[in-house]
Length: 346
Image 1: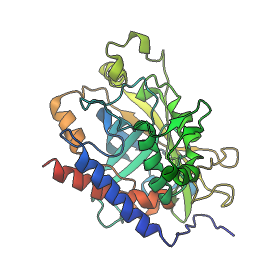
Image 2: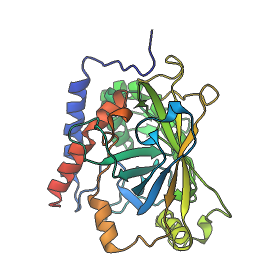
Image 3: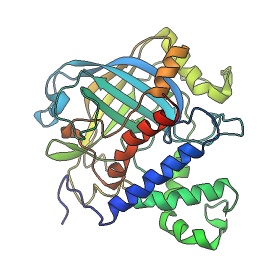
Image 4: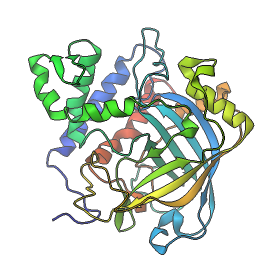
């Protein structure tokens, strides 16, 4: 029987992760434009400064790690698109096309034991996306997912309107069957239209330690006034950056940072992040406020700093160690960032 916060490791997982490293390194080497972008969330909408304010009055069960006492941390926050798809000129796809949107939050001045020995000292990263569940179950699913996505992109796989394959090469059928469940999940996220990165909800999607138990976390915006009108955007290809630029030129932006505790190991599994943790069983509880300062962030210097900066769910305190197979695979992010900087001569 499963236990709260307990991980279960497939025997061949390390070999799977080794193959993933080889795939990502090939993708970066093979990219025909310079510089080579991130393999995950390459298009940035803005790299901005702010502060992370811990709540003063909350239940003792939430006073773990940085949340143990009220304090304020400086932060850098990166808003992004997940897709690496680009045209023949190296430009990323327009923001109006459906995509997974992400936010990477880096706290500075954080003391404590790190979960991963190669982590940057005195930092804590939180990574969130605009869906409460992940679209793949485990690390091995990545190995089947990439050939299918590439096959669809290259026209080798033709899909019906209902999401089933109309045409698929025999050699890809096994991979398709292995990850067929993921395509409706991914399409559901990509069907969402985002008005502004500062107006959306984001979730960790995957679980993390929270002291002796497990959690997921999320950030929810403070919505005030009218939402950004896409129809009035001056640059519809990059309107998400424009929306952020116009908002932060006038005022700060705020998000609530919330935690959801795992209370049932069977209904809220660690090793399958495609399963939604029911908020009726365990609601999200606010533990901090994320304030993004009013600022100008489109300078060339800021854009270059953004491009060189790296984020990883494993750049964290031991109290928030990433859990589950998908997160164990994401341990390679730090190595991939180093490899990308190496080939870009950063």
